Length: 239
Ligand code: 13P
Picture 1 (cartoon, helix red, strand yellow):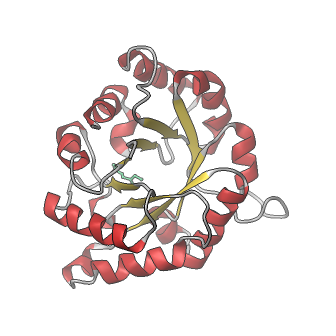
Picture 2 (cartoon, protein in one colour; picture 1 turned 120 degrees about the vertical axis):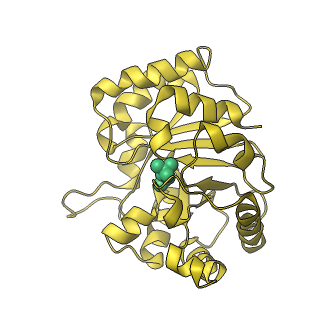
């Protein structure tokens, strides 16, 4: 499967960040290698700009969240159709920060994933256990329930991102064996051909090892995707 290396910029980035992405394109020798998919999910304010600037450079642009409805009286929200209209091809749904900060349930995440598919976007559906859940040995129960509750029925395209909550922004990562174990569990729960990304403290120093693990088809990168040198090194580490 073609690896997907995705950068989640979270609430970071201004119009001046175009320069960082220009630097990234330069480090990738002028255009993104076509044996891997490269995605940047900037804040919604930058989607249109990035799609215009970098659409021809082999970079896909995505959103970080969407509303389930196509339009309506939902102040401050953005629909999947609007993201697609701005030039997005993907959207992250159910990130643990949204599940925690905005109380998003599996049912809501599924509705958002369906909305993405309706609008022609590929949803990246995030799942992952907390540290307490892993300590209690419940990580598969938790991730299994999230997959069951968050993935839309039907044949629509989607990507799964396994992001253990305790590994996000902490510098901690599961062992290669734990990643292999969880990805093979996820593989057994979803249909063939769906990519499963790992996310949580991916950086240049661990990318090669993580991306070589069986059933790891790419990475969802937070902090390290903000720096062109680091993100380029992670992209280059994909097999
Ligand atoms: P970090 O790479 O900063 O740990 O963030 C991971 C993440 O949440 C990506 O969605």
